[in-house]
Image (cartoon, rainbow, N blue to C red; front, side, top):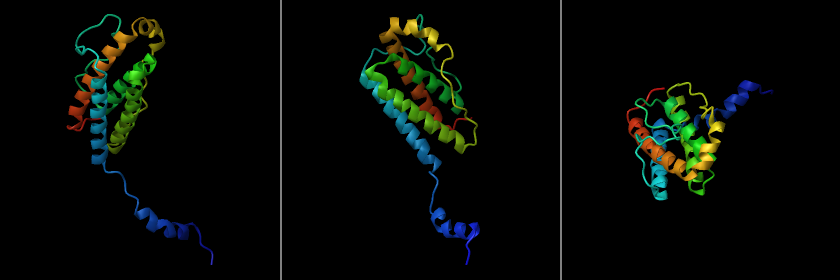
Length: 166
């Protein structure tokens, strides 16, 4: 007796029926937990806090707070912070940069659950020209970036409760 593709599929059916998708609530809870973890890591570094509204000459490329944060805007903001932190080459921010990548993956999962097209966000296009600023003021850049990132993450945490749009 020959068993074609239909027989093979029927043989696999019991195994496939036990596979469950990750509940979106679990992904949202994991996202919030990771945000809280990153905020705690930033607090543990214990740099002097800088207001997210305060302007620091030469560091205008570091994003501040945005009034409307959609999932795509959150991903774009995190991509920029990740690019900045990676370029600092500081031991303090390596784990935070890795956490940001994981957070972006979770945001993509949330977006896909809402059928949102979330293209891979790019960082700063003109980032190479900022190399001189970064080399001249590594510590200041780190302080400002971490302070603004912490404020942005706390804002994202609040907005995740209200089911942000695409």
